[in-house]
Image (cartoon, rainbow, N blue to C red; front, side, top):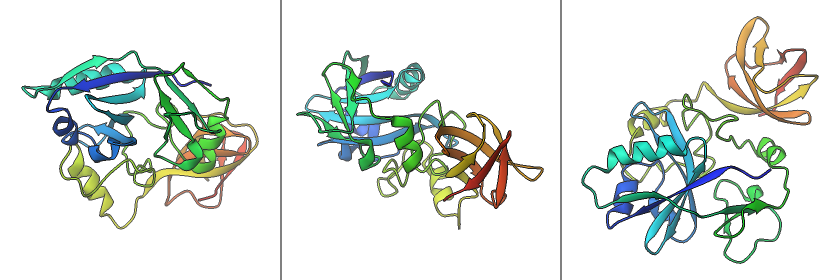
Length: 245
């Protein structure tokens, strides 16, 4: 299935400094490839996750189409007097896991996600993206990620989506506090599922709500869990659920 993506072009002399002060990752990572990053609220919650692609005269932001208007609006709000312009760009995104075409760039989140190509005909090579994401615990906007997500609970450090050495950005203080806790109490994990259970089903550990089932591929799924309660055999509807990692 082809992702429905929008591309925002950021131009102007201040574009790098502007984005560097806002997003979770170091903008320098996008100079010769793709960087995975997010824009957060001051409270550390997710506004949008996206890819950044540096070009000689602009930076492209590759974001899920249904959250692109909110991202565009929030970036516009932060622009103030900076020499920055934002515009929708008519750039198509292709992706695949097979042989990479000329000009394609590796997905920075995980090698199993293959490549992304900008400017060619939109589409992909038919890879089973849900199965790949479930196998490697990679959350996606609209399936696992949303406006209540915190990037560390979502695994952004493991997915190369946050840089703790780059300095300040919006939501950095909350994210840093979570980083320096002894351990995260909630977050995504892979689970084994035996029986019928749809994404969105509540996971129960005994009588206690232990989490929510998300993307499923066969007998494996991504689940959001309260780690202190997610032990032993759990239930989601009529299905048996076991945490794998």
